[in-house]
Length: 177
Ligand SMILES: Cc1cc2nc3c(=O)[nH]c(=O)nc-3n(C[C@H](O)[C@H](O)[C@H](O)COP(=O)(O)O)c2cc1C
Image (cartoon, rainbow, N blue to C red):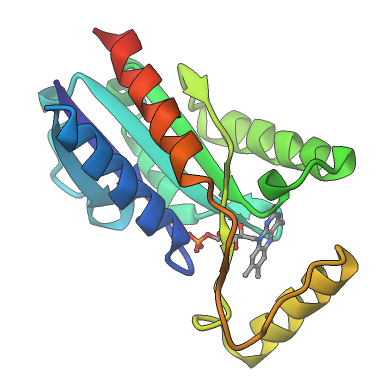
């Protein structure tokens, strides 16, 4: 099956997740195109039989490049089975308020873009201190401290559950057949 994986990232973790999804699906015999949505100009969506879209949340919102892609290609995307993978740090925990906020942010994003994914699965992201500037590093240290998380501000800390993501992808592609 020809599968598109389109992602938007700010600090790189969603690119890593999208790359992992591409490798997993390739290994299962699919033909996968991995694309940063910012580079989607001229993309022929009719070539694909399914799509994974992934973007990360920053201060309650997802990347504009993903919103623009979803809006501008709405009809073609609606014709495909789609798996939306929103990436966040809230998804790394089980705080009810965090999850409420996360679901509300996804609902806002879907309402704003008109995107109606066939399936949505939240994926935990990472603290990427090696990518942050001074102010972002400071803000993220405060967030980590507020959550009682021990972080070393000189190192990245990854919460993405790769075996769970692999199982999810395997189940998803099997359901398409
Ligand atoms: C400035 C900033 C704001 C963030 N805001 C949120 C947020 O509102 N909710 C949340 O769950 N995670 C938030 N995060 C965590 C990111 O979603 C997480 O680090 C994710 O892995 C980023 O993906 P990316 O590396 O692909 O950009 C924020 C991270 C940063 C750096």
